[in-house]
Length: 476
Image 1: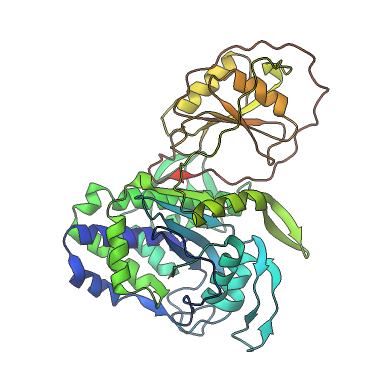
Image 2 (image 1 turned 60 degrees about the horizontal axis):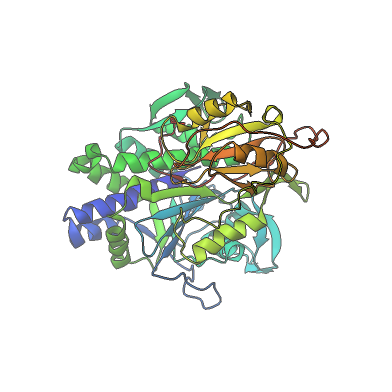
């Protein structure tokens, strides 16, 4: 589930209240409503190095416990009364950059196959050796403390604070906002989650809001697609909280903060002073400063120990975590791949090249324009254009291991474009259109075309690129 989504409303609203002059007394009032979780030992020495420039990492979790159950009943666990059996349905690492008004929220698939560190079982008191397992099994077996250790072991990133949201809090926050706007490319109706929404834009709250972020059945890539839904939903919450209708309505703003803080649990080291510091840092944010990504995935249908699991792309994941450890803000350009040398002959004709177009600049209609231009010079366009972030400047052609020659032809048709290997791709190339896009041009193919390439297989679901809370989910 996605109770962790309301964290955005909590801290953003805190920031607004402080900026508006609500000050220390108001923060103290809300601070007393938050439950503290004891025993997380976030001050141990055997942990990763802290990130530079006063950056802050917060692990945000939505578990499958529900606020209407008594301690010890079902999977409920609040404060220091954790009961084994909870599962972490939503795991997000929020990185607040030290020298920029930006935050990046990194989502982890709950079925990720990871190393679970050695720990003492809270049920038996016995030492459990380190072993491999699903990410959500760490929370199931050892609660927040073991989940923090597992995330730090996986990422090498120091976790400063921990936040957890319950079932009731999620719905209450969305209802206090009078719903948020989402967008679906096609109608969705599925009995297990209860979702029943039309294609296009919808304003949702209550049960439909929960269904929107919970649905897995019927989605091609299961948890990965659900994460994309959750990221879209967080963006909608950010935009709604920062809108004039909320900021200029003290009653609504107070209601959002009240219900959210009542549902929030945090580590006992997160003091009221630190909450105030977080609020001051967040007051300079806008929706474009909150970005989302997902830990890169190699295979959504992996099998380990006769279990269906998600296998992470270790190389790409390490690159993502390295950037977090170094506090490199999202959108910082990586070294660009070299464009094809002018003297090198192009050997694959545009008519043989399948292309998926992605709008990486956040400019409405840019994806459709690029698709039309490429089709006009002979390329095969696959599907409708989609969004992929808002900060892309340069156009990039992504290709699979055996499609470098095809990628050179496509890059030659897009002045200024570069090529980049994406091992998850097979027959179809992807072009991420940047803000510098200036049309497509015909290309001249010479030389001998290679033998017929293998038929396309179902690719692993690669992680979505970084996107921003300011993105319009319906724009392509």
